[in-house]
Amino acid sequence: MKVATAGQMKEIDRKTTKGYGIPSAVLMERAGLRVAERVKELFSQHKIVVLAGGGNNGGDGLVAARQLHNEGYNVRVFMLSKEDRLGTQCKAQLRIAKKTGVPVEFRSSVTPGDLHGACVIDAIVGTGLDQVLRGPVVEVIRFLNETDVPVVSVDLPSGISSDNGRIMGEAVMADVTVTFGLPKIGHYLHPGSGHTGRLFIEDIGFPRELLTSGSIRTEALERAEAARLIPERPVFSHKGDYGHLLVIAGSRGKTGAALMTARAAMRSGAGLVTIAAPESIADVVQSMVVEEMVLPLPDDGTGAFSPEALEKVLTFMAGNVDVCAIGPGMRVTSGTRRLVSGLIGVSTVPLVIDADGINALQGCAHVLKKAKSPVVLTPHAGEMSRMLDMPIADLFSDMPGHAGKFAAGSGTYLVMKGAPTLIASPEGEVFINTTGNAGMATAGSGDVLTGMIGSFLCQGMNPLDASVLGVYLHGLSGDIAASEKGMHSLMAGDIIESIPSAFHSLSGRE
Image (cartoon, rainbow, N blue to C red; front, side):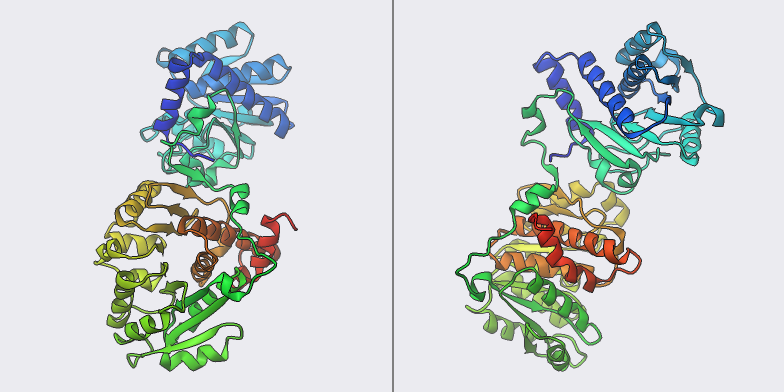
């Protein structure tokens, strides 16, 4: 499903009213009715308190108040804006609400008695928020968050930025958010995702062609889309049909990274996996594998790859490897820098670069433009900030924008790991993952993802689809593992062992 910015939704609204002739009052009426329907469906409280601002969000709240009042609910509306500062649509809805007998008060604060036993509709401010909230409304939101009453937010939890999910001074902690037409980026990015609660996306009559426009380049990954990408396994096939993945990984003290990458690849369907490890630890790796093969590479004497490793890798890869994953647990040395940059420049098979493979590119990310084959990068925020030489705070200010810009500028497929993980293509598309949980913030989780993406590339998927399926299935595997073991006890190995269940779940065989 497409995910919109505030500007894109404003343009959709403008084209709907100006281009198609659907009055904005009609859209507001439908929005308010959808909110009222969700309140009735989800909550048993007969007392309803609407906290309304002076813009269109407040107008939606007034419609919901009127509808619930007409159905016999005990409704009170507290307008948190001065009367002379109400927008045109909100002012019109206020007049209608008063004429139908809805109790409306202009207030700058609320009391425990006001909210006791109520379901609160948060209609203070929506996608139009473009500055930090100040004044009495901040205290109202703080007070609301300290109560235990259920809260339904209209469009967005008030105080959350529509475009990056950041808190603009103070933000409502909603139990449910009812949004219209399309979800907003702020619903999915931290901390907005934690304030949104259950998200309902309601149709209020925006023309379909506007909601599916190619100009909206960000999408949220949906289960059906991920399920469609699962590679087929023909009856008459053999291991060679599912590719040979070379995993270049590990160093002294970090053999586990290589093992987890390889095992995740096997669990995800790769036909063959070879682990290329520094020769001083190759015997250790060999003693811990069964299905995987091991290729010792020249060692620099410290348990890391030497500069001579590149030549042996290229010799092994010639006609023998379909995909190469490089980086987990490698350590950054002169040897690994030469290995990573050299492979980017000459490899004729797709590359998945993770962890220290990415760190080895610090200061020389321009080599990515010289790649002769597709490159998938899987950094977390820290690795991405180092590669871009950008403070993490600046990266978080617009993660979809930075991800899309980097992928387009470098010609790579970028998987920016986090909560949530983002996937960006060289064509400027950005996908927001919707699976995964906090238990996956554990050592080795990223190595598992690298193996899964490498495996799907081996099975003939294009880099974007392999990244999308890898990320979605990785998160789903983590969710299944967390449901069995809890988030506190979750380990990367649990994610690997849950991959089969995730496949079954996604293919409808659970």
